Length: 198
Image (tube, rainbow, N blue to C red):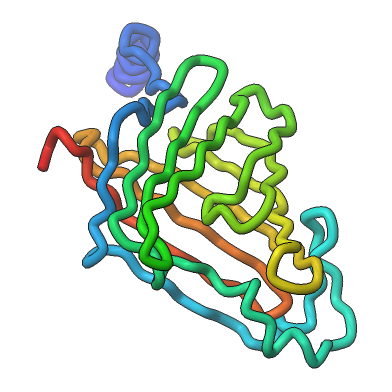
């Protein structure tokens, strides 16, 4: 019993000596998409009956437009040469997405406050507006909110959750995006490699 008590005391002292893991990851840098390790998954067609309003899903009657509306589909399959440039401070994360779509070079700049306050940005694909809040969860940056698209037809609201996580060696950034629309749930996993490690 004395040995057990001694082990507990030593462990408690070591816990006080060893630094706690930083809850915030350093996402700063330029990140290049590794398309071979990225993927899209469409799930549960039953969720076409879900209506998204102000980021909250409510079940409603299916609409004939839901099955044909192109605005709810992600553009990941049509985007090439995707690069993220991230500038992170204690207060905010600025993300510049640069990519080629429809044969044109495009860029979308977003800025997220890291104090949990509401942020207004263009959507990551440039097709609408993104209203969101950001938090840190176990060294993962979580952006969640509602994307609103009006340009290509009737107003469509999409619930978006983005999760940025960094590998232990800091050379790989994984972005998981969940998009909930009247057509269902699409999960997108994008893997980026730090430019200076290529």
